[in-house]
Image: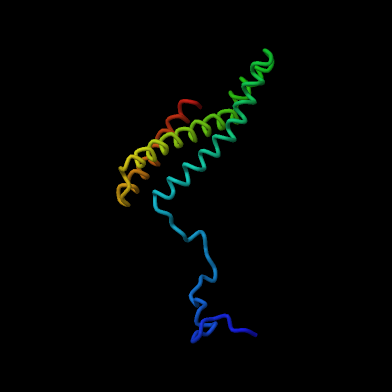
Length: 138
């Protein structure tokens, strides 16, 4: 067998001994800026799927008076309200996160402390606006 390791090194010396044996994902804590970035991506994907529902509802509602009545009844029920609140909530966060990212692109809030503070403000404002939207739409 040919020794592929550099002269003077043992195979066991090159391999790191302190690798994680069991990575517990529930113990990892993300900073607010990471949570904000992840939420921005998640709400973008959620809006894509919500758009499928919106297009379907528009298509059915303009197809006939009965279709309009069916969509109106669906949107007046619990499922319709939950979908509407979820969609508007995702849109709200995505817009707030997009504004935050735009400001960061202009060179502001790039430091660790100000970036985390802006993320906390955006998340807090999103929660308040989602509750307000939920009260209005329910």
